[in-house]
Image 1 (cartoon, rainbow, N blue to C red):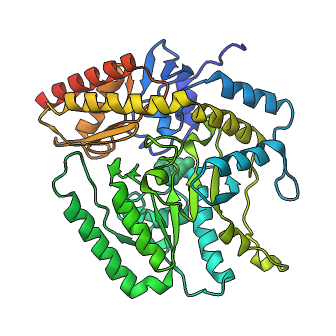
Image 2: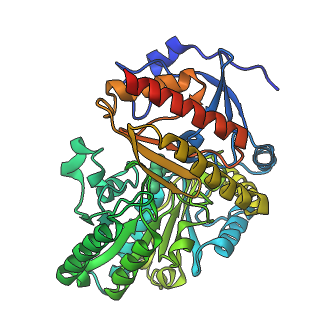
Length: 441
Ligand SMILES: Cc1ncc(COP(=O)(O)O)c(C=O)c1O
């Protein structure tokens, strides 16, 4: 291996703009030199257990050799080629293999390179689909309250209620929302919350059903909203109503896809196939930026014709990048191995154990688990983004070698599937100690 280039924090401070960061008050970033499995290794020799799969992407852990090898082999053959008028084996094989595992009927794949663009594309396809079908009056989108779909303008519009985009609000287009029935374990109010949400949906559909272009949702778990979870039967009831109004259903499985919720896709637990699905993050095992928006043949055929006006005039320089596709093929092979599904069940069982231990801490409430994601709320002052308790939690977790980033008052664990039981035990013990100490201050 070539020697590691030293990381100079002064150069980082002078030249780099980090995402979602208030640089004036933030601690200096942690220089990371390598990773293996669930661990990251820092320049100053520390080991950090990555309990959030590095923003939910590294589903198989870091530096997985099979994926690294696939990228290397592809790089020495073909690294990139224009994807209009040209094609290549990694993209074709990936599209075919995805269509074999995706929810029924999603057989047509459009590539892009991050979760936000996959959402942008789904929203644009839905919009133009209705124009191509001769129903241009279908121009309303509906979403769930609190949803997060990414940081480009369409995705921000669909996620406007997440509260991240205040400066941009005047630039966003209208997306209506219905309440999200946030649910936790043994929640006595779940049925009432779901009924209220469905009643709001019924009222909205009575007024606007024949103008609905598409409904978009993160199925089962709203990630950035704070790992807010709902029951599959609620999502199924929503989809049934949207379909009775002939609206399209977009499932944003950018975070939930590839096993996160304990099944390959959250759609499986809901028992429905959406008309469009958005995937990214775990698609390449977190190695390279790639995303897909897959849709049904019915949608695809609406774009066919002898006239270019009917075509979908959208593309990115790196559409279907061969390296990303090769990484995705290697990652998919690991994801489809029986041991991976066993890991989802093992992690869920460990979450149940760990969350039961945390339930003894009075400041922790609203425990929830779906597949490999576990979360709860910490009820202490100062847990807003950037506030004192929130910063203290992050700092204390890091001091104990844990990468956990509370989202406001929400503590969550979303590990790579290769994490061991011993690593999870260690993590839950340390979380309990940190929260107990901070609660006592
Ligand atoms: C559900 C969901 N959709 C879309 C996105 C945006 O993905 P990206 O950050 O790759 O643009 C995210 C990112 O966290 C997400 O969680």
